[in-house]
Length: 366
Image (cartoon, rainbow, N blue to C red):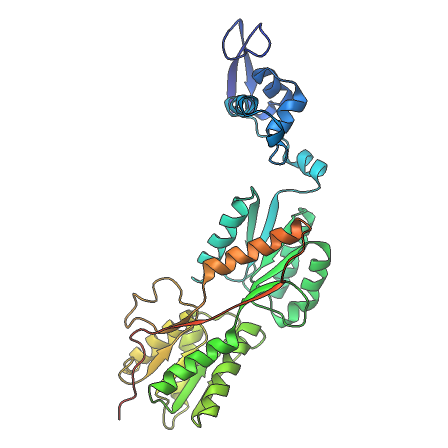
């Protein structure tokens, strides 16, 4: 069904709201800028300026309000494509995420969407499931849609060439995951320091036999965490057992698999474990519980990211906080800077980590 709008037409120019001499019915789908101008009693150019985010300040407030009211009453939506052609922009920004099932990504997206919304830009969000083939298709489709910019939280080492090509065509910002040496603007986390903080916390509690459950090896975030943790443990003269296998997504199931592998190795088990993100830590805790190993009585566990509700699980999880909302906000601000063609003070921001101590860690028992 086509919605219809019945409007009053005045015989006095500029007084369309005060006197009715006839009724005219419009299909909302076919309402034009000319209809809005007639309804508001102004010429088409004035109506165009009043409805333009870039030019509305050139129109008197009273006139602008009258035009906006007329557009709302008639259901005018405007011709977005034509407007984009005139301005050379579409008012859209592509936002690519690796895994929507990762609880950490919600605050990041909220930070991006809020910042873009303040500039009347619409985020077009899509997911790759961390597949390089999907990332390639998504990028091509976004470029075909002529988005003004792209923010991606999906980027593995093998995607470097693809993302560098995309960055030559449209402003591109890496969020969360960096690609060192790529030259692509990035908002990321100091993962090396984050891994070091996790190790220092466990060492400070007295643990000397430690292990880490590693995320995918071809993602810089996890490589940095592994490096920082390993270096700190070795520097203290303690032992570090690196549990790694070919996993694509750092999920709860991945945490379960790695924890099972750790326990099945035999020998003297570690007294503390560092999981490379909170979801893997939750999976590891579940596996330990299934095997009769209590946290933290028998083994301490540290996660990474401080995703929502990690303070509500049992036991509440000690973790390294990565401020997702702030990271998303900064990524959106950086892509907006490049869309505007302005110079950025820095194209690479590395956010500092913070240790959040809860009840999943304790001193080792004899």
